[in-house]
Length: 475
Image 1: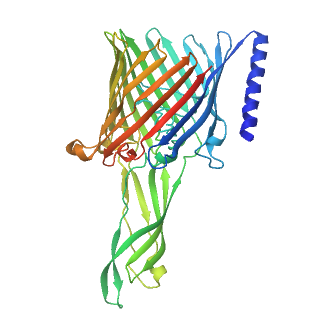
Image 2: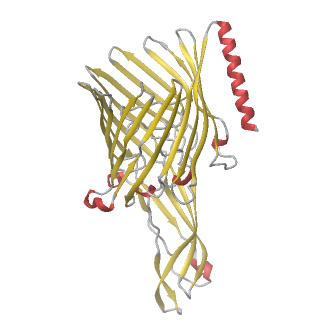
Image 3: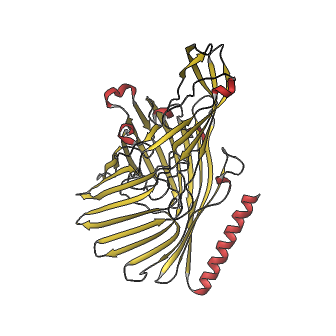
């Protein structure tokens, strides 16, 4: 009921604003789309994996020659997720900003408010695109980011352009929903045994080895404070056109939306000297590391072939270590035991790693379009040892006066260990058919078939083959 009221209220306000704008001689442009996205798994009983109904409402008001106002609002209802109080239960303001042209001097534009600042030139997978927080709510919507409160200055001069960005507040990455909620979770192991000495009397101690079990694990994120120092990010991007190519360099000093563990506090749940089993509860504090991002990108054409290369060097501002706080076994057992301690565990080392993408696209004379990309490293992969390789290919053809789109060759291959490819690979085949009965409507039918071995992200999705159907009406 609350959602319906807000939806009606938003539409009434938009209509009222449109009427007033027309009367005043200015233009308020209302656009957007209404979509329903439905997916179900092929496993037994074919459970629904996704059902999202979304109204994406975009409002743009041009204020003569000096600037514009822009807003983007999502109104949604999930049939598969209904957690009380969750963010998706409410309207989401994706963007809301004011843009002023020729601010102070000609060629300098100012944009302030909640906005999406896109850096990079590759197709959806962009190592350089780190200004906004990643939004992995839908794992299959590659390239989606959240809007962030920001101030952006952009200056144009001949073939040159430069951007300065400042984000005063930090927002953590939005994790996947549904059955892929653990897709970005790195693999890690906890200690299974520890050795100590058991006192037989005041002078005799015998060595024993205890088995470790974890009854409960709780992750406690700790966001940086909302002040000028801890929560803010800043960056610069400079680009120029050289012939058929656009080249840009960038630097960003910000926080990673994926956390690292800072402290693991263990509390004793129970202990048995008969079975030598120890049961713990673990509370892990998570923090968001500061990073240096240095990016380079180049895009253009060679003949009729579109090409792009994009790379980023990423380095933490310091070593990030996890400390472990152990319980007091002596107090729990009522007998004197040596005090146990674990050394700090290095979670993230102050060493750079490189993510990069290279790709091309081409349309043949018969209308077949091909897009191919190679990527080294995905957004959740850190350090040189964790980076996987990805090869993506899509071919499509439009027929029946471009009403029917056939994308039967579409998918990708990933390899996490070239020394043992047979046990460290994954592939995804994602054919789809799109039909447009009119210029504003598209119906998409498709499937995702995934298989693989090893601990890579896509290999862990091999049990989630699904069928999908999406209907979108744009206005």
